[in-house]
Length: 184
Image 1 (tube, rainbow, N blue to C red):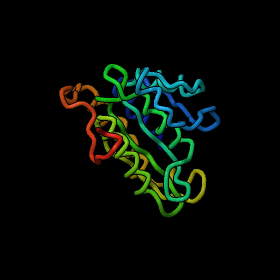
Image 2 (image 1 turned 120 degrees about the vertical axis):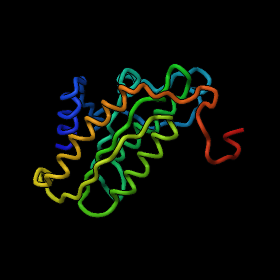
Image 3 (image 1 turned 90 degrees about the vertical axis):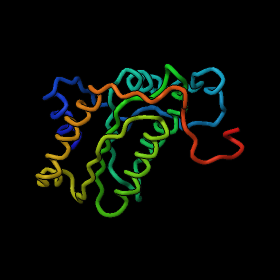
Image 4 (image 1 turned 45 degrees about the vertical axis):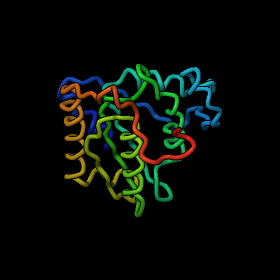
């Protein structure tokens, strides 16, 4: 429901929107083989190939997830892990606007938001706002008028941000915040 409101907001400003659900898709976990670092392609051939294409074509991506056991769904985390293959110049998520919508019954909203924001920052995406809602029963979120408006506003905000054409300075590449054997 919140994604629908965000799409409404972005369509009001002329954006094309598409809902892509990872639930029910055949997306295998990253196996850590490292082939994407060498070839620029993930060797796992599954539904993620279609999602890569859609993500690369998009100016903005809203990550929406219910919160299960204090974080995003396993399917969402699997898809995010697989975006490690999108870490090259010309084939990355850099400079795309990212928004977040999360709904949970009790605890874990902030953990999901934090992890999704950190993902966006490490991918050099431009983080927009987020909307987090507590809702115990399916459809309850509709009664949260301020929340529904915030979701609409998020869609509009993302369009306005994408129109600004922000770009990270290429000379800095992807930033590493923690250093060790994997960063050389």
